[in-house]
Every structure is written in C-alpha cells, then in structure tokens.
Image (cartoon, rainbow over all chains, first blue to last red):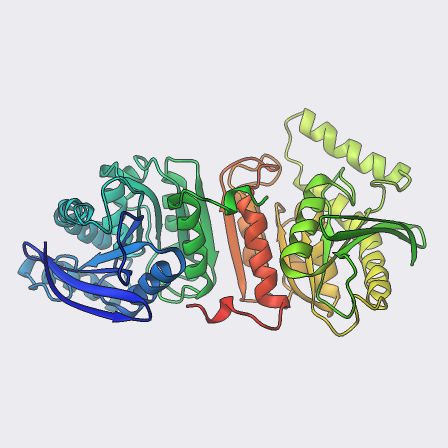
Length: 253
Length: 253
C-alpha cells in the first residue's frame, strides 16, 4: 500500500493510496493514533471512490464516531482503465433501459463479473489497511454499499469473516440471493419504494434472503438515487451500535 | 380535565387525569413551564395507558426531547368498563385465532368500531391538553401507536389537522387503507417481517396506501410483539426531526 497524497479538512485526514493497481482513499481523524473501527465504502455503478455521497458518509463517520473509512475504485471505475468486457456489459444494460426492458438478468451478470474481480481486491485492501497503526487488526470492520456497492458487497461480506456489520440496499435478489443466504452479520438494508432500477418485489426478496435475523429494512418513497438524507444518520447509528465497544444505544430501550 | 395524582421519577412528572369518563396520563419534564411539543401514545389491543412499553417511550421522549407525552385508556381497556359489544368482537377474533383462521376481517371490524368511539375522545383530550400552560396550543403534536394504536391512530390522524407527524405500524390495510390515503403528515411505519397477526403483504399495502410521500418503512424480523428496542430511538429521532424547531438532523447529510 503506497500513500500518494494527504490533505486535512475539518479534522478529517484524507489519504490517497494505491495497492497494486487499485486506487483508494482512506479517511481518518487528523493525527489519529492507535486502532479503531474501520468502515469500507463501496460506490455505485458509474461512480468512484470520491463520489460526493461517499465523501459525505466518510466525513460524518470519522467526525461523529472516530472511525477510519476507506473506499476504492471498483474495476473499470474511477481512475482505473475501462475494459472491453466491462464496456460491453454496461452497453447491454443501457440498451435494455433504452428499450424499456427489465434489466435484472443483465444487472445480475454485471454484478457477478464485477464481484469476481472486486471481492479479492477488497480482501487485499483490508489486509493492507489492518496493517496500519491507526486502523489495526483487532477492531470491528463495517461495510457500506448500495446498488453496485451491494452487488460487490454482499458476496464480499458473505466471503469475509472480518466484517462485523453491513449496510446494503438498492439491489434485487437476482444473482445475490445465494450470497445473501450466507451473510452472518447484522444488516441495515435500504430500498427505494419507487426504484426504477430494482423492482419492489425483488428488493423485498433480497432482504428476505439475508440469512442473519438481525437485519432491518428501511424503505422510502422515491427513485433509485433519492435515498433521503436521514438514512446517513441512521447508518451511522447502526454502525455505532455494532462497531463501538461502548454501545449506548443498545441499552436505551 | 381533572388531575388525580402526580408522581415524579428521574425528572419526569407523571400526572393521572380523567376527562369525562376517559382515564389518562400525562408525562412531562418535572417543573416544566411554557409550551412544548406533545406526543400522544396509543396503546395496543388488550393493553392500557400505563403499559410498560408506553411508559418507556414516554420517559425517553420527555427526558431526551423535553416533550409532553400523553396516553389514555382506549374504550373497553385499562380502567374503563368492558361492554358486551367489545367482548363479542374480541371473542370473535380469539375464536378465529384458535381455529387458525385469518383474522383480517374481524380485526378491521374491531378497529372500525373502536375508532368510531376513540377518535372523538382523542380530539377532546387533545383540546384539554392544549389548554394546559406547560403544553400549549401553538406547538407541534405527534401521534405514536402501533397495532390497535394504529387502528385508532390512522383514522384519528387522517381526521385531525393538529397532528404534525406520526409513528404507525403492526397493522394491515384491511379497513385502514382509506384513512391512510387521507394522511397528510410524515409517517414512520413499523412492520414485523414474521408478524403472526398481520400478513406481510397487508402491512406493505398499508404503507403503500399512506398518501403523504414523506414516509419511511422500518421492517424487522420477528413476531408481532418483538419490535426491536432500537426502534424506540429511531422514533425519538423521527419526532425530533419533525416536532422540534431546531432540527439538526435534517441538515446532516
């Protein structure tokens, strides 16, 4: 893991890194020392590691909870080279959308191809992050990612025992139900009630398929990209409940 | 409105009252003066105004947000006389449950009969509470009630323009969809994924029927009575967002 640049704003240090050919970014409290919980952020399709939504999530998690937070560019995204295979899969999806056809099979195929590459990448990145003094190997790790972030994240969390809790959503059961059935950690699952990309029944079926019974579904009106701002705060409290040792919210009932 | 008794514990004053034949209880910060947001709590079927769950909600709301909180015994519940009509409706439901039959039509009938009596009662109680110095008439009012609390609460909130925001849930669309379609305030809606009283589709249909588009569905695994403790905290933040003037959570995105 090679660190390239570092900036600090509002008490949050942002370090860009590369690990082999994977570009990433690590946010943490400025001048942090010692181990702390880590949250990995998976961006959506066509987005990248410094998408404004991810930056907002990272700053809030660092500021409110002192977490370390990391994101990487998924294959074919952000600063990474596009490939013929990736372009063809995306073109298939765009074509179906233009024709008003359902995209579930194409999305499932895209997610599967993507996850096959991205899951081992996340595992290597997690290895390297846990070697850092101000992250550490003994601390809880969360995963946050909706849409393509869940397309990669659900297989990743199913395969990776170091993850303690996850926020998923904006995804359907096609191609993901089998991995969801192997999830053994608490999940907060977001769905958009009027999602133009994910049919309502398919999102509900994916929530249903999550094997671990500590799961909570948050559904809000609106389209795929219209998740309300208060869900960021909710995800923060979810991770605070599950990643922090001194958990105040669990007893307040 | 006649106050009967007052006790204070942990900074929360609890005053029992009657209004005509309706027994109620008002919780507020000890030695509170001046107007403040009010939250009305509707208890579930077979429960009463001082059900432990309601007391826990009331204490948390008073302590965390300085709200006034009130509950009353619904018709045929708590300290109120049982009636032949009420007993017959409940016996119908119990008989169906014993026979393993669906109870939706009986629940809808029970809710309708109950709401016809309870809605004007809540309106009279709200009138009287707003005359109190430490509640006041100019402040936002919330309604919280699941199961039978929604059976009464959804028609009540549909009919009552003084309500600013509501928490509903553990209820199905039978007999309530029409009132839900007249709700014009933000709603947080709870459902239990494995509810033995309310079929999954019926709960989702009731959420769908809520007319106002600022609504959020929280679904959790478990049976009817197994709503997780963290939903109390979530409802607190929901009311804080909608009933408090100085709203910090809305900007934190």
